[in-house]
Image 1 (cartoon, helix red, strand yellow):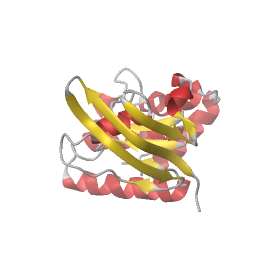
Image 2: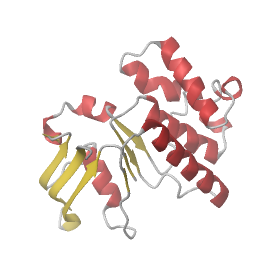
Image 3: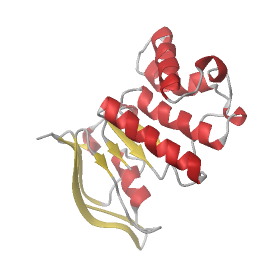
Length: 195
């Protein structure tokens, strides 16, 4: 049986007098595709943000690989977790290449190796590297931007990938294509995803 990579043990989050997440417990095993389902305002985004410590829990314990998430160096924790937002959240002043290779290079990967990885990832999603590497986000369609956001999250080979409704702002065709893409990447990399 796979080792749990993430555990929530009676976790709650309160903002002033408002309870956003109320006493949740769950476990995500390595290689699992774990989906949080709930109505708008039910605390899904807050739960994701507690995993990479954009928000700290009010009570309870969150463990990553058996260790309290509060015991990790915050920068190292965030660099070990991929995060795909509802909008692509690409850096507008950076090219596609720079957006994809940013975290791998920050983690010490050579520019040459990072570029090779960016080319390979683009080819996997049927985006010609020669055509796309030098483009800026404003030159891409919404679906293309979201694809690059997903590639950026997977590029650093993170131990865990968080996806905060990454398909909701897309048209039905782009949404279906990106769901297939994420499923394919998950199968190819055996990554752990919390959606």
